[in-house]
Length: 502
Image 1 (tube, rainbow, N blue to C red):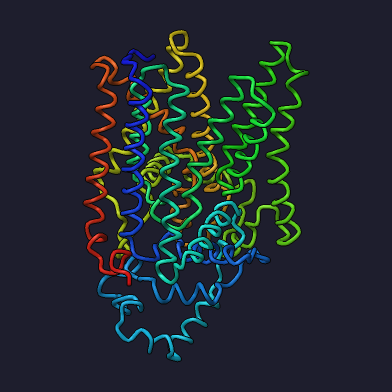
Image 2 (image 1 turned 120 degrees about the vertical axis):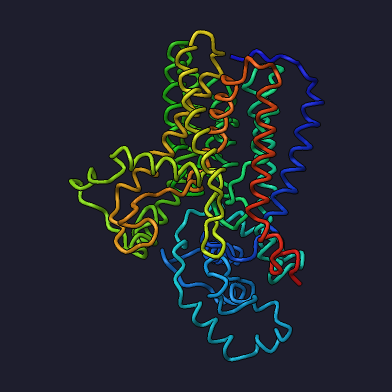
């Protein structure tokens, strides 16, 4: 499968990856700073929950009102430019930018506006806790450092910088373990990750941590399958998998991966006649997953009367579970409907869902590239793994198969949610377009997807020389960056982002 052998010294690889980490950190910082507060992807709701966790306020109801402190900060620093046309904006600038801010804060109008915000319900209240705990601790650290007001909100956003930087480093760690020695793809993978354009990394939201935790768990589980690891390694792996599952329900692919790895490991141990000595370690792995996840689900049942905590959120949006006999009526079972679902999910998986003045921040050319290249390269990789079975590095072939399992399960989960509900009058998803196509929800599958995508590139360009794939990834990175800069030019010139915040 891999013919590109240059055997670069590890020190050179580390230096290159270090530079990529710095570039990624700067890029994520700049984009987080450039976007005003609060975007259309429920950033205000996520912020409210982070702020509550930072104060030790674990939700006691599945849907709670916004806190007074959150309401004040949202009113002061939020902009309506995401969801309003320029001619429709009632408040032309955020309150913090007014010269008479102190008078505004003391006015009855401001007090009334805060009271109104406090009556709004936060539908994210019962969300799984890991991201909000981590971000809450980060927020508390910011307050200890003396950060407050709008700077504190941006400080929470800037948590994405270390999270994304670690993701880039870990992508190299995974590639270094599973790619053959000297393969240029060991640099290509972190290069691609460093410039991946998903805008969930520019916002306060739980999707920002999914990719990192899923990548760590994915790597650790694969290591357990291939090698004989210690008890402590199994414990750490179980806790990592539990943390991934407790970020959000849409990371359910981790549960499927865990079960498959354990079953295959048991089968392998039986063939090697080592099951008796190794079984306690697998039990510890499973216990490390089941106990924390089970405790949270039990807590949800006792507090909310619902193990997932989603019942009231579903009622909040007006969704209704369809009768079993009507599930097959969904348009996703038609060729046109399936193509629409896969294409839209692919677009949002790559570039996210931000809007500006109600217009999607997207370019048709980039979207077309994302959809076509993903379809073609995933297909090429799939056929390559099947047809070159005897020529493929066995270990890496297994990694690719598990990557297909993760990506396939993640997409199937979005399809299942699309089929399950009658969405009534909800604007998204709706009865007219009853599809969950928010690719950010399955951001945990980012690294497995890129492994497949890059392998498709390798099959396509391998005959052009050993540097062809790396050059193709570099060209993609440049193209993606130029596209992002073009789409966000107006954002960078906006006078109400972090660069101008006083």
